[in-house]
Image 1 (cartoon, helix red, strand yellow):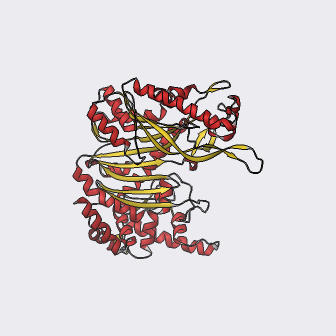
Image 2 (cartoon, helix red, strand yellow):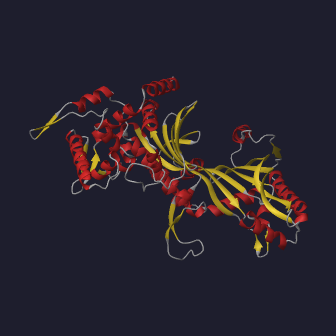
Image 3 (cartoon, rainbow, N blue to C red):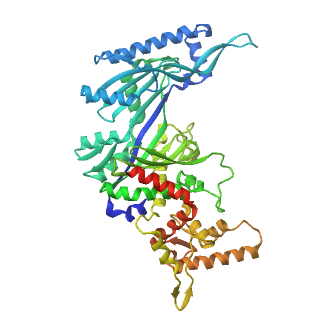
Amino acid sequence: MKEFIQKHQADIVGVLSGFDRVRFRGTIRTLAVTEGLTVWLSHRRVLFKDFKPFAEGLTADLKASVQSIAGGVGQTIEYLPSSSYSKEEHVQDLIHSQGVTEGLVCVLSCVEPCRSFIINRNPQTKHLDLVPAPRKCLHWYCYFLDPQIGLCHVRIQSWLPFTVQVCINGRDWLCRQLQLAGIGFQRRDNCVVSAANLVRAQALLNSQPWAKWSDILNDLLRRSCPALLELPTWDGTLAYYWSADETEWATDVMFRTPEALEKLYPFLIHHGITTFSSRDVLRFLGRTRMPANGRVDLRFQGEVVSDLKYRPEGVRIKHSVNRNSIKMYNKQVYVLRVETTINNPYDMAVYRASEADPSGKKKWSRLRKGVADLPRRAEISQAANNRYLTAMSAVDATTPLGEVADAVSLPVVRDGRRYRGLQPLTNPDAKVAEAMLHGEFAINGFRNRDIRQLLFEATEDKAEIRRQSGKVTRLLRLFREHGLILKVHGTHRYQITAEGRRVLPAFVVARNASTEKLHGLAAKLQSTAA
């Protein structure tokens, strides 16, 4: 990311990185699985034939609990006839029309799908069985303007196993923190476009992953439906286990003027959709161990998808892998936002002790959804945003392609030796240029071997390997003498120079994009800007 900021520092005010939207799931583990619920029912002396009236009684108790919360502030539960109705817009209308500044805004209810249990008669055993099954039931939405975290809501499933979801917004929370700290800021919708003390604002965002999430979430649940925290078990009351179902971690690059971002943004979109390969997208999202031959690991069984979406406010580019994604879009005309969304953390790792032995030896283990791993999830998301912006630093939005071509197509003379001009639109120069721009080389550079394995088929013939290596050496020397790469002193590695990052991506994009694609994308971008 530093490369991107340095390149455009004249147009950038600052950068803020932190949580955007976070959706938590609260689960009573005992009730969430068939075996646990069976034991709990047995402890409550409930037979399977009595399951439905027993569950209906629990639902009635929860409804009374929610109604008492709403009635305590003079409100009633408002039923929505369709789950497609925009609850957020409805809540915003209520906030503005009623002038709510703190506390419970409203309680909504709606019938929506859920995961629950039913009683089936087993034809083989002739007995009743408790089995998990999808169904629909009433859900309550309790919206709060919390003095600490801002606008949030609690979604409560009215039927066993009483799963709960809590949604908060990290940027809304930041605004509350800035107000309490007396730091001036400017906000547009869900975006901070400027702050009097960016260092302090970033420190506040950095502290959010380390918050006492279980306490915060249990408190919101207690304020929504106290009865849920009073369900008895054989050794006390049932407790909720909190996990992060979805996290959005956004890096906002704040520009001085809308014109600066408007001028640069079409080139960033064009570069992202025409240049980034599946391999690059995998590296952005944390798969840093990749085969050196330029291909994707054969063990990867997922799907990599990149797409553009044309919205009223601009163009959004999104890259998705296994329900996780990284996207870029222009927001509130001043902000370039790169956002990593994690729905499936199991592809990622965290250095921790076993959950069964918290004081034991630590090792790299699969990242969990539990709130205990939120700091690591934030770290992974920020690294993804950094890699994406670093790759975007290669974009040159100001120099015409013809001028760039003229600068490298002429021969150069170094120490009395003449080196031919480069032809990056044709082989083999084009393949070398494309190989050097692979995302995995952005930070640590590349070696002759790395480029060779990308250009040629794998072989065990040592003579052929020496021939390929010699050819790569000569090609790299050409790029080096033209000032596009440099040798890292004391190593066998090369780095792309600032001039190389300005020149090479333009040729790769132009070479890979068809005439139809270039004209089509240009027309869409122009129509969007207009």
